[in-house]
Length: 323
Length: 212
Image: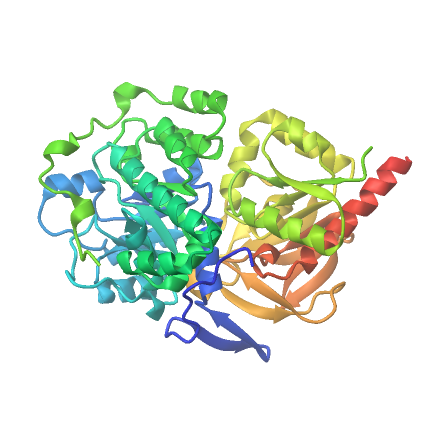
């Protein structure tokens, strides 16, 4: 198999079986959900708040759009409680673009997730950008036919989310700040932990892997599979603080499978050109000449100003349950 | 000319690595020597014996192909020489002559226009309708597990196009000489027989072009 099936719950409520012309068809299987995430690879998923932005994103080469009520930087300045986007806006975006449409729900908010599934979004982001609804648990994502993406700052978080049914992982870089350093920290952390367990796997030391799986609060099975693969068993995207083509290239070079851009595009003064440039830099991340061409398409004077992350009132990456 | 096959997977967007792995496995099953590489530059396209356009988003791949004239020219020139090509899902859309989206209708997007078919994008619905099911494919014995992810279907075919498979009344696999298109993802099923079928085309084309 080219996609790992580790941790799959084949009999979960999210798997729907029906028949077409006497043939049995299964939806919401692990392969179908993780497979969808694999189709996003090497692509850029862009945050949008309305149908006009969604069309700009599609024309610029976004692989999918993520519908929010407010861009992360506006969530910060507005304060209060951030919830899932208006259903009407999600519906108009669904009817206006041909690429996948994703939307965010609050951490642990199983009902917001059910609503998004009913509306028909292609992927649900259980996101710390919104105010968490449950301080003890994340959503049990195996109950859904729609695939989920979750954020993670380290390997333990990533593996626990996958065990709950996440089909894609992303970094939890500090959203809406224009500061890419937190996303970089998270991907480096995951990479370093995987390098370590890979070495232990090569030494055939199952006993040590069991000890580590306890530290990571994850199953031995998933730790061993990750060690064997030398990477997460699902795709891993960069998210949080990405604002320029160079930022995208930096994170792709660190081994990310693709890029989420939040405020970075539509909080800039040159969204269409910038969106295109980030797409180009993501595809040609390892080719400095092409990344330079992409970087030339944007003007630093038009980048979002950003925030100093040392003195943030709200660190979104710290929100929600710790296990 | 070496006996070793060089197969390229268009490396712009989508499940590139999965196709490299599936093709490598298929070569191994067939006991053939060969290399499978990701290709993004005209020089790379000009030296391959076969091209796979992976799954992903067809609008994104079209945009990235059209961005650089030389890349589009290289692909077109190799197609004129008869280069074997396989496109799965988004890859088949990129190869097609015409395409429209089931919900939003006509969508301006770059298509290579070499496969004489008309495509309906997202033909089976959105992601929660994506599915897996057994298929019958001509040229492949026994059933084959089709992985359909926001899959397109073929609405009509030209006179030189052979229908390889249908599902639920819709055309889901076609062949036109050296070009294969599928609605489903053969690289994800763990069954490499579609890739083997493609490699047979590559082997034959390489032999023929050597003889000429």
